[in-house]
Image (cartoon, rainbow, N blue to C red; front, side, top):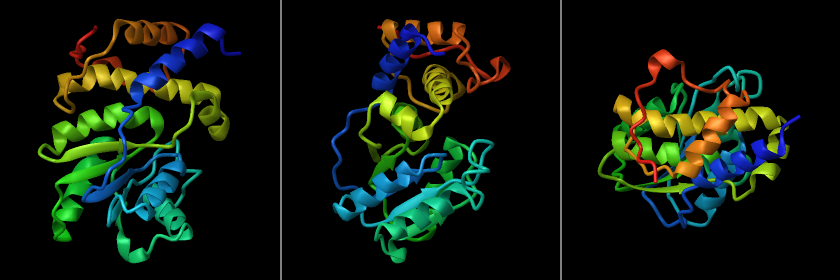
Amino acid sequence: MISTQAWADARLLWDYHRMHHDPRPCSVAVGLGSHDLGVADVTAELYHQGMAPVIVFTGATSPTTRTRMPRGEAVHYRERALELGVPDSAVLLEPRATNTGENIEFSKALLAEAGITVSSVLLVSKPYEERRSYAMMRKLWAGVDVVCASTPVDLEEYADSIGDDRMVIDMIVGALQRVLFLPGLGLAIEQDVPNSVVSSYERLCVEGFTSRLMPANTAARPTGSRI
């Protein structure tokens, strides 16, 4: 049973993770692989709205997606987008990445090999991965404008769609840890993190929502500002 306080803390983190960007036309849309086919749905919808002329779906498999997406995250995303009317000619497939850093680096290389000039990226992710993905894009693909997008849904509705409340909160907590620590590893830009958000994160860790945390020996000291 998840406590009322834990849900309140998780909602605060959820809202912080959302970048609240307004979609605008970009050179390319990049759908980051995950367990959530909603990423493919949003990417397809943005394509049909004319927000990007080409899509890259990136992702192999992970312990979370191996059963749900046995052919690989990018492959399942592509299949979903084609079902939703996106032409095959508009989709590039990057099936090797096993983490967000590789998602970014491999997608960048794939687009360069295809001769596609990129000045802006419409970055589509799970809702609670927007901020971390944005911070990593700004560090690892410097020089491009980044616009974040995800399924427009609240925390409870999203958790219901996944069917595992605890896993979703675990992932929200893990994403916040990475916002705090990845700048110290040289993998993301620093961002302001309100004290209220850090306090909620710490309470959720104490309550045991820790399965998605990086091991202590791989995490640097947090560098994000606390305001």
